[in-house]
Length: 154
Image (tube, rainbow, N blue to C red; front, top):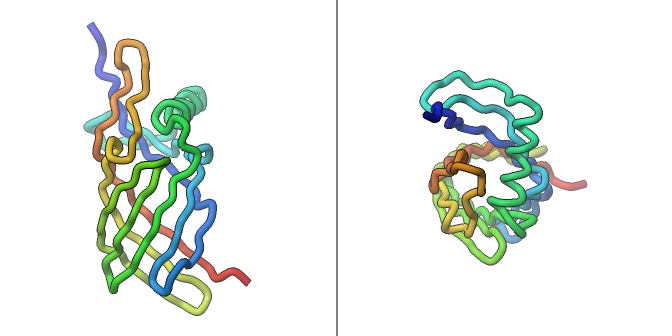
């Protein structure tokens, strides 16, 4: 008999670079090797906590080497139109288009963008990790919440 061990994860992907490529378009670059597990909870509960450091390291390694495989960076092109953003997410040779509502705040110092969207891992060519007895399963659709503050380069 196997115990229920399914966990949900919260991952952090720090922004490696951002550049304005057109008037209302921004290109964001994320490095796969910098993805980290920030929290986990047993599936179906809301008790989020910090994963044990050994579990955290194993999960991060599986995400980088098996889920992303040879993909080293993810590029996101964001085109803004009022409160909507159109995104093109590129992982290796695959891309996925998405649209979401965005809370946009501009000041002379920075542009802040907050929002949430759903992406398909299979559409981006990402794969299931291989663990004995299938102990790790990924849902194909993942929710991405973002909170980015972009400052002009001086």
